Image (cartoon, rainbow, N blue to C red; front, side, top):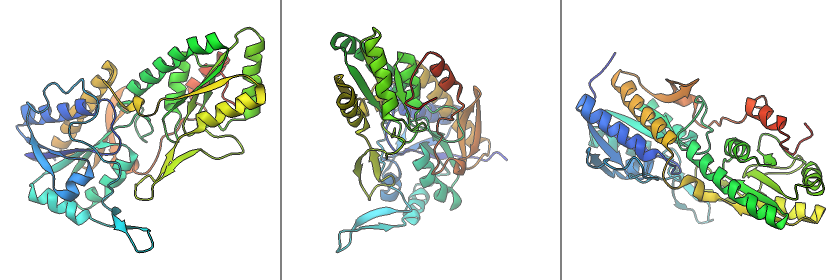
Length: 368
């Protein structure tokens, strides 16, 4: 049954991405104008709940933020309330504490009737125990990686793909001029969505994704054929989580104090070096990194983020509890937010995009 909600908290967890501010704007304006509710922004994700850093958002606070990247509230990808880092012991090992009670105290002290949490699978994992403690939560899926379970798309993804595609397009001229193999490493963690979409959109010759382990011999044979048959260069779109059939993912850093301690990166450089050694063809690497998470969201992401923010408020005001907004087959819907907690949506091996890419002779580094 619909209930009266007068004070709404909103936070953004995990990494930043284009479109977060569009969600904050839609949530705030919908709650204020349509339901006469008050909205309170929680600073730096769940850390703001732990430390009681909350301020009211008015329509003026969110005016003009639709086109801005990042998040006006700040975010944090280290704070997990059930595993809150408090320092190291005498042996240098991290100490973690459950501070859900502090989050609940903050919610009670600010008299928040419900929370809207914006984030990816890690944020859903953090929100789940708060929801189970009795706090009404509505979640909005956010990540450039597009790997949140239950939704066909997350806002931020299309902007990241556009950025990666533009970079890959620009690499063509250098690759062609110098007769090189150009490897472009993109983000995505364990999911290959960015590499697949940007690789297909840019006409990359090779696309490497985590879901399809590659054989270096297959890639080398492919680029050598292109070199000797007149093309004279190759473009490789490589996901940061890609790995060889007989190898492991390349790890850039491990931080045990973070909810996601392993940071991937470096596979592009390793791949370029091995290709050059095996084929004697010059190979270079470009790592896009955080450029993909930055900047102005595309029009499509602004629209999607606005839809998500508006739908989150409508769900909350209708009496729905502990749900996550999703887009399926072009239609807005919702699922239990716990369904997305700690899970990743990966590229299926029967995805139509794979078939389309293979049909135009794109190499995935396997023998298919």
